[in-house]
Length: 253
Image 1: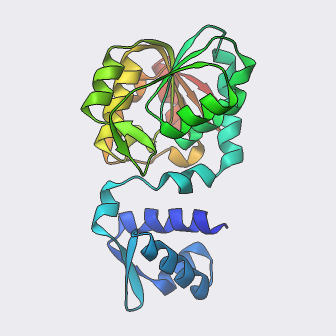
Image 2 (image 1 turned 180 degrees about the vertical axis):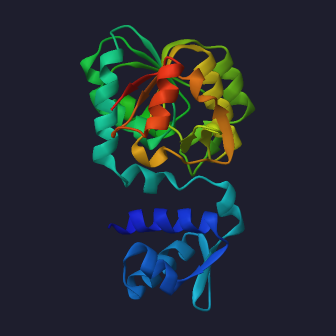
């Protein structure tokens, strides 16, 4: 397991329980205590955690923040690209696309040169840079307040811009999907932006790997039945398959 993956898992564990010892983390992650201590030292320098004698807890701000963009960007790249390859069948020349600022959707940029004359609407800074660097497609960047953890623009200005735009497809990812809670995010601002992208698109597609199922973020974005297509990497549990069938949601895996 790479250090970035361990740091992600440590953050996830600490979001569920207030504090944990180094020995407990070592057992949960099947990693030596010396490696865990090095990870925690790095995370403390980044302001993500605070170490105590023999243990660690999340810094106060970390509970309400997304996992840093760089961690998410470097994690599970191959799986993210596989999800993006599956969405290509729905993209056509001359389409308009809403793309969120997620690291999963970022991988889609690698394939957009397969199409002509796309108009891409996004609130993602990294996605905008990638599109400008590797394609000739038109980009509309929704302005707003820069959110460094997600490399995105969010807030009232962003939402006002998105509310005045329409796209053929909205292609997004999420923190989690749960049958009772729906599709959710780790921040309210991300949820609000994605609600608008869904509302103002003809077709809404979510890219969700199997780790997102049965998982809840802090803020609800949508009811699952508001989504048209869900693309994942593994066959979901039967309870999800039944829900998708009953609500005419196209599931691709």
